Length: 209
Image 1 (tube, rainbow, N blue to C red):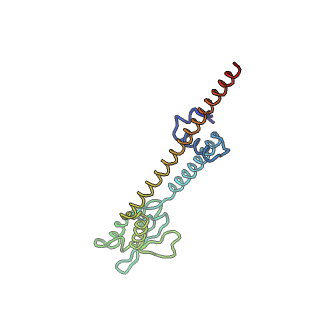
Image 2 (cartoon, rainbow, N blue to C red):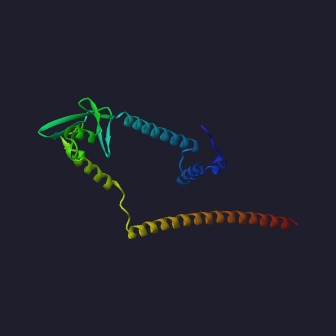
């Protein structure tokens, strides 16, 4: 662990200086080294969790069909000309009668041209209670994605946000000014005390004469 002496390295590192300032402002008993250690521990824990999630996601196999993900073992069904054909997602591929096909390739193999795969194919993913049309699943995903996107702020909301930012900036500036004023007053008081002590000493010397 690196150790930072007061008034040394923190001034060269804005993040460290901010940490030192925060600890001082809050009156915390935690030392700078201890705070850095806790921050590093928290960062390492977050990185380990993120890595674990990434590895878990990478191990999930399936077929990505535009916005619709079909996990491994997903069943696919299509009805045409009085018969029903089935396909299955194996690993990261769709297999129909032992051949790898795309969703459109499946419709071509079953019914030829003129069929839309989204409308014609029904899927049953692991955990699904029943068969669902691919177009319905796609619409559901697109609707959820649209709802998740942040809506554009209205002019009134933008003005309110700008006002809040200005207010925060003003409070910060006032706090800085107040801090500077306090420091200046303390320095002035210390100078005044030194002058008073010097005057008192001079008065005593004159009395002795």
